[in-house]
Each structure stands twice: as structure tokens, then as C-alpha cells.
Image (tube, rainbow, N blue to C red; front, top):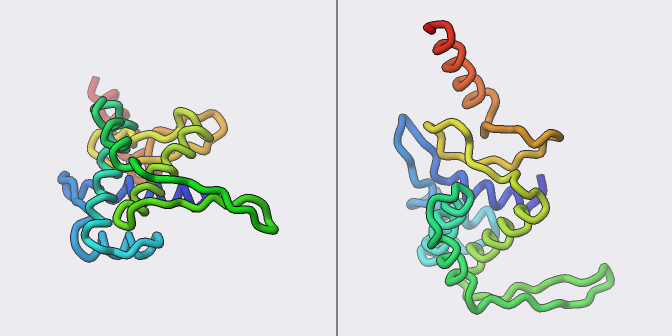
Length: 165
């Protein structure tokens, strides 16, 4: 997994279900730590913009809120990528408002992943899970964020319901 995929999944999966309830991993110290670990400042405004990006990308991936695209558009408004030539080739410099920088990088990561792996960024198929995955399997049929947890749980439920029938 590359850095963009790691950033995207870290942000998307920052709202897991714990004991049947969604927990916002961007609240308080965990949100600041996530921002700092991904090259941000951890400032409250930055984390708020990151939350906007997360919620909007989650809605787009799930297909449950058409206005999420407009929210992402507003979030990246005013952002500019400028090419800079180096010995190693072209490096793209991202220029955006400081509080939006990490959120913009997350939106760009989402865009890159959806272009590179069409249809492979998806929500976990377990309705009781709030996590996302990027399916790198050859057939593109991965359904669960983790086979060890959600996959086994869902297969056990299916088996139990068949046994009862």
C-alpha cells in the first residue's frame, strides 16, 4: 500500500463502530495525532476540515449523498498544483489554505485511488462495520475490511441462518 492509500484509509477509517456505535476518531487528541502523523499540524481547524473531507468521501463511496461532491468541490476550491522540475523529474507542489492542506491531500488521494483502482474502494459489506477497504485482490471481489473479523462474522451468520432453515 502506498502513502496515498494509507492516508485515505487512515482518514476514512477514523470513524469505526465500537460496541455498535460510531466513534469519531478525529475528536480530541486522537484527531490531532492522526493529523500530525500524516504531516499536518493537528490544529482544530485542520482536523475540522479533515472531518469534512472524511464524511464527504464516505458519502460518495457509499453513494448515499449526492451533495457530497459539492462539499468536496468547496473543500478543494482555491487549491493549486504547480509543477517544479528537479533532477528526478517533475514534482507537484500543492498550494492550499493551511487548514485545508491535509484534507485536500486526502481528497487527492481518494481521486488517485478511484482512478487507479476503479470500483475497488468500498465500504465493508458488514452492515455493523463503518470501515472501508481498497480491494487489491486479483478478481476484485473483496467484501470485508478484514477477513479475520468482519468476514468470519458474516460467514458465521450466513451459516447459522442456513442451518436454521
